[in-house]
Image (cartoon, rainbow, N blue to C red; front, side, top):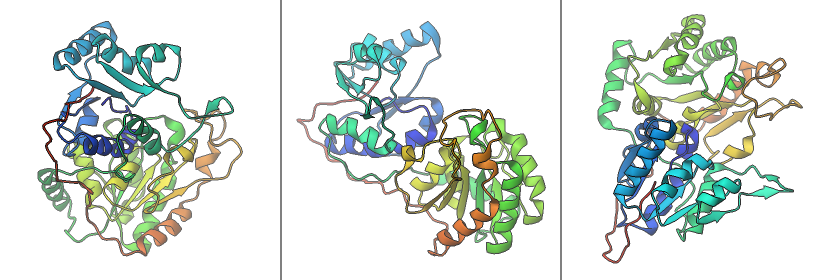
Length: 363
């Protein structure tokens, strides 16, 4: 299976992986994607191997096709819509190449093409969980629920606990994990001053200690927020302390509440059963309208949203006008359920073996 590029989309692909495994319990299922996606999905029982994508350009394409050819895969389940995602399996002559035919070039590279969901000739925004499950259903794989799942390495979780203890965080301290960045672009970023005020308010109201968990290129942003909220005991897990998505998963697992822009950590929180408040601006909420029970998605009703732009051409009103006080109200709703720091992967550990199963795997 070719995994999506974005972290959140990759999490929302886990129900499709689960369906594929249940339908073909003896198959060898490999997932291909960015190395970070390998860290994200590590430990899931639906996956037998992870294939990191080679470099870009002609050499990368040739290397990918050669690697897929050596593995002699039977199926290529292509979740991204790009022609590039389908080119390697096509060159490797994988017998069955399934995915959405977004355009004529992509269709030419597939031999098992699905029509993208459309309405009045335009792409119809549907939850990504459902979008990916339509592919596995097309392949004859019955759904095994729409809940997303991730696994946390206990050794990484122990390391995170050690690092928190060094910062003076006791084992029972309720943590607010804050992810202030967004790889999509600056249009998704809630203002730093809003984050700082929300951290202070949540600390005062619920006793949550804010821990900022930035990506490496977001460290300066996180430090500015933590400095503004230091009265709440806020601090940053710097890149040296928090390397990669495995550590982020373990930190989220330890949290009592997650505060996130509409980006990957939001979906990590959902997969690990943690309550999460989502600050949504330019993106269409219909793409992520799934598993909402422990989420509160906050938006401002402005005429220009959703615009799907990476940079706001005007005044960023969709997020500037989203007041920190709304976060407090959302937290009160979520924390009223009595959720405690914990972790649920919803993983199935049973894996039947059937000699008649034809191994399938992925490009």
